Image (cartoon, helix red, strand yellow):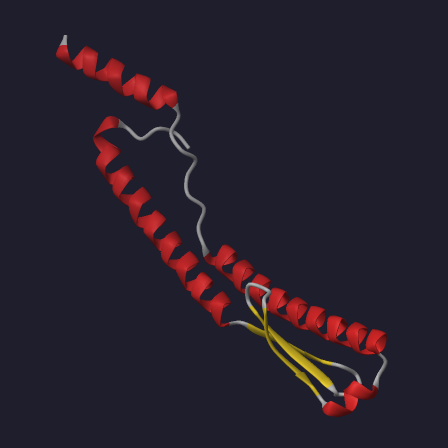
Length: 129
């Protein structure tokens, strides 16, 4: 982005700040929405169910007492698979929220570099002379 003309600095800064605030509101809304996400999964036989939050942490696990008849290895594999599926579901939902906010959020202009400051200092010096 080109540097604004000196007389446009205040307007440029006001627009930059307003745009930054809009982006922050969008990110805060996305963060709040992700905290509300609940992924869910169930084993094929319906004996194990799990849920996970938007950050991926398991939030619930239900094991039907009949599942305890399974071998330790089989039950462990089933619980692990269901927990992972719930986490994957939560991750998918959280990614959808992040993608949505990203698509609606305008990009900030590139930051002004050191030439901007040098130009302003040189302009101020010329104006004083």
